[in-house]
Amino acid sequence: MAIWTKYSTTMSTDNQYIKYRIGLTLNSQDVVNNTSNVTVFMEVWRTNSGFTTYGSGTAYCTINGTKYSASITSSQKFTYNSYTQVFSRTMNIAHGSDGSKTLAMSGYISHSQFSSSNQSYSQALDTIPRASTLNSFSVYYHLQPSVANTITLEITRASTSFTHDIYLQHGGVNIATWSGQGVPTSLSLTATQVNTLLARMSTVTSATLTLVVQTKNGTTNIGSSVSRTTTATVHANVLPTATGLSASIYGSGRDKAIAMYVQSISKVSVSFTGSATGGAYVSSRSIVVRRQSDKANSHTISSGSGTTGILSLSGIYEVIATVKDSRGRSATTSLTFTVQAYSTPKITSFTAVRDSATPTTVSITRVGSWTLLGGNNKATLSILKRQGTGTWEYVE
Image 1: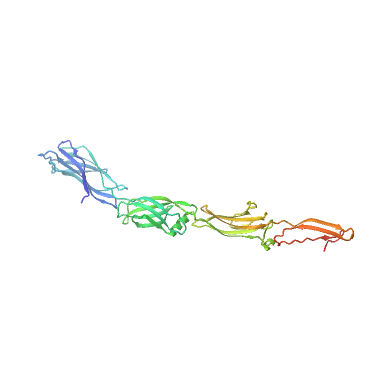
Image 2: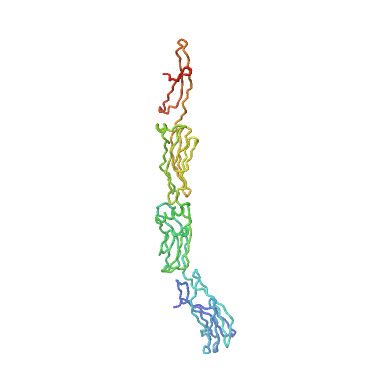
């Protein structure tokens, strides 16, 4: 059964009593192939009663840009209000990508008893349901390592028989695929898929994702795929980690033996572990050692471990370790230690005075200073004597 039949307005010939019209029947539509099967025909009739027109001729009809013709034989007669078909052609008409189509037709008749000028007629065919529309698309949460996520979407489809194959892409690479979907409003991203995406975002904190929707009728694609983009962001808590910071006295000197950092003597060995997370990689590690109060006597180590120069000041020192990842995010850890004030030993006073009463006796006084370091730094003050150019001897 035909879907519908429609006609052009009445068209005139040079015989005022002979009229004709172009008819169009929509027979069926093929959703898969996006075509309509139509029949185009022309009909002639007389408008006054009591007369009949005989003769022969040709009916010409142009359909969708192609001209066709049909012979009118002498056996065909045109009588009052009796519609005689003089042309008919059935064909498949392709629709546009959006499923719409307006069919353009024109026709005229050359007959032994009359003729007509070319007359045009156009008719819109029923639109064939085509590819669904993707109205919106977003990633519901900020991305975190090994944490499943959700995408939200809205699809408008033209036919309930249609399904959809849906692809989430980054840089043209499929991250996730959902086949045979109806009109879902949300789809799940597994923790593994999130990790894959984060690995592809190793140097950025946000990226453009594309959702591609292909409409299907069974296994056949309906129209072209449609797509939308959205921005996915890496959660602010996806940071590198700085752990295991340690500091120790360098070498095997006296400062090491007494376990004290000593001004102008000690160096410090430092190390830490700096790691990246969430698909990023470590771009740099560094350690700064300096006096905390005024940031003076600063030493920078451009790696995760190393040894400073001599600590030239006393007081509380801070050690700040920093790791930076490929996304430009950083983490720090710190500790402090105390450097003991120290100065070299000094003899501040020394005298030797002969006793006037006992010339063989010399009174010696001596005063010295040194840094005690909490009792861990003992000092020895020795006095030597000699007569003339003789040998030096310790004074008891």
